[in-house]
Length: 260
Image (tube, rainbow, N blue to C red; front, side, top):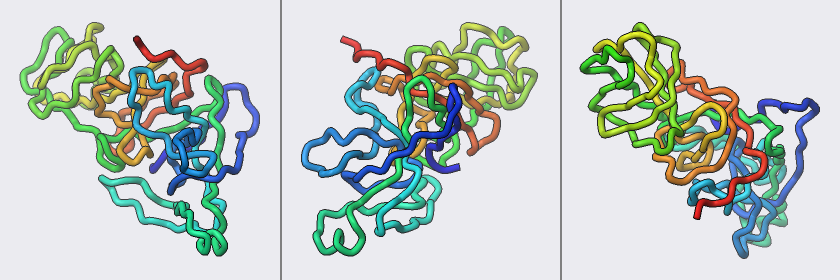
């Protein structure tokens, strides 16, 4: 799947949709923030990659779920770049606006703590699957996974590891430490980890956690150090199938202030 999508409401009812002028080129499936940057001339803009611990400077208000103006074009998605798709092209040229109207999108609002959002999880960019880790040494205690391919060090217990093959297949654990090649969990897997067992890990965790975005702001970046992130609540994380990993989350109701 490509891009963020509305996945329902915890309290029921129809999704709330609004039309906004955009302040930049935007694609269906991108998260939308309030256009607080000076001089861009629209109501909304694309939600940026988080730049603060517990990001509170970029207010996500919804998902772009439709293009309203006449500039709508379809850009073929390219795996490993971005989930493109349907696009509105931002312009400040008078003749263009006369022909197509100002850049305008339909936004499905995300109500913090209520609206459910489904998001693909990729490795840095859309279409690149998370790295599969293959155990090289084995661990009888079920607490360390060793693979020389390595992934980013996911900070602050904000990551999840999942066993794809072996005696612990189907089980998830919270990551508590990562070095260059070793991932550690504190709550052990119930069975010994054997050489050849495979795992996958992502920078998201059930319950209160963090979320940062891929480079085109159209998916969760699952290979992120999580020094900066948006505060979210994860209701489901599914790392079962390579290239189809996803999460369902809601924005954390009441943004957590940036750490001092």
